[in-house]
Length: 340
Length: 171
Ligand SMILES: Cc1cc2nc3c(=O)[nH]c(=O)nc-3n(C[C@H](O)[C@H](O)[C@H](O)COP(=O)(O)OP(=O)(O)OC[C@H]3O[C@@H](n4cnc5c(N)ncnc54)[C@H](O)[C@@H]3O)c2cc1C
Ligand code: SF4
Ligand code: FES
Ligand code: FES
Image (cartoon, rainbow over all chains, first blue to last red; front, side):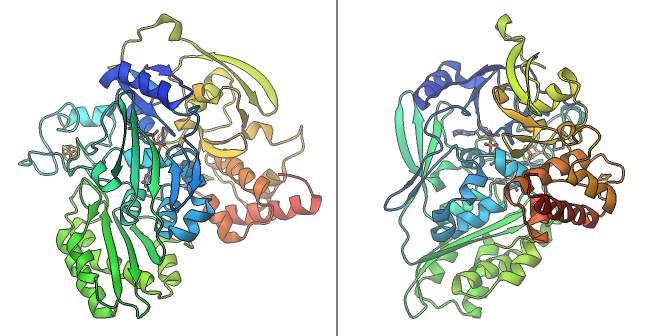
């Protein structure tokens, strides 16, 4: 049995109470939502918080507000996000991303907030304690060297959340609440390109809501590369959203890559390149090349690293063709084995 | 390596559960998962431990009707919950239609994945009495089986669904 370490457990009933507890615990405390990321990490002693502050009974984290846009509580499970009609109809990229996270059981447990705060991943880090001890640990936890690039000054662990790229393409904001106050920031600013300090959330902040703007006339999509058809962490995620003029030319676009960096990677150049153009095959191919030039997959997840870079233009192509209105169902089935 | 526990009163957690319809009170070390409490405190060893990291589905049980992975569920968080495990499927000597179908169609070989598969399938059929083959595959996509090749599992679930619909009862 791979057992959890000892911890103290607190179960607040409100966000305010949770924020007070988190402030009082300081760096010793961590929030637990679904626990599907944190508990495996604790079993492997990658993360060893002295106190867990549970969000399971916190009032108000499961709210869905349909106003001019859509506000989703961070405590909604991914199954609940996928089951929300407004997500499916108006924010399809998020719907497709959430539906491809992990397995059905894990989506019943894992939350949207937990998915956005997911720890970065690496083959040298997601191992049990004995394994990591045998290599002298690594920079991300207890060691000094990065085994992926020994000359690297920073950790290159991979951002592996599926919903973050989709939500950034949809221009989402997040609300963060602490005992000291609250703030709203663009989801893209929640992340750093650093495998250790991957998140700009302060240790005393609770992510309470994801705020989506009203997106009339936009289409969005998410494509994911994973080893198995059933479930796996992303080896590449491509999220795209665009608003098109009646003649089919692009008025606004946002393309974001996942799992090729320590943060979800918004592609400003490729996105700007699309504006004013019609999504014909040449334009799509060129956007794919621009996207691939930014993708820096590292040899610390699954599948061959060169191949993973080579397929970036193809996946950007699938996404943009779906946005253009092509029927991508057969391709989708071949790649993800899910009807999305 | 383990973080020293500061408060003595947290060395034992105490919760109430409804397990297969029966109310039970159980005390355990607070770091235990639902899987560990079921197997070690309640002696319900039908639920299997495989990877213990959320990757195999062997430990799947129903919590308030929903298929979850008991290896990643803190038992502490199940206080007041209703748990269904494989032990609750048969009624006396009478196999549950899912169990009977798995036996008829070779849906179980070594049997290690079977409790998790059965409970996940029950969770599906309780909500969707008439799922398509695709839907069955999707619902079971988190359950690994190294023996059957999966087709027999899908056949078994589809057949059990038929039996249950004919009998007009909930799975
Ligand atoms: C086998 C397996 C496969 C997986 N596959 C995928 C996959 O394909 N794609 C994917 O994206 N994920 C995957 N996951 C990871 C995980 O299941 C999901 O990311 C899930 O959504 C995490 O949510 P949670 O509520 O369980 O997070 P938790 O484990 O509870 O928390 C994760 C982190 O977020 C913090 N946190 C949680 N909620 C908040 C909040 N409201 N405010 C601030 N911080 C918070 C926690 O402190 C912790 O650091 C997989 C996990 C497993 C075990
Ligand atoms: S990228 Fe380097 S430092 Fe970061 S987890 Fe992997 S081996 Fe460790
Ligand atoms: S033992 Fe729980 S998923 Fe493998
Ligand atoms: S029957 Fe052996 S693993 Fe499924």
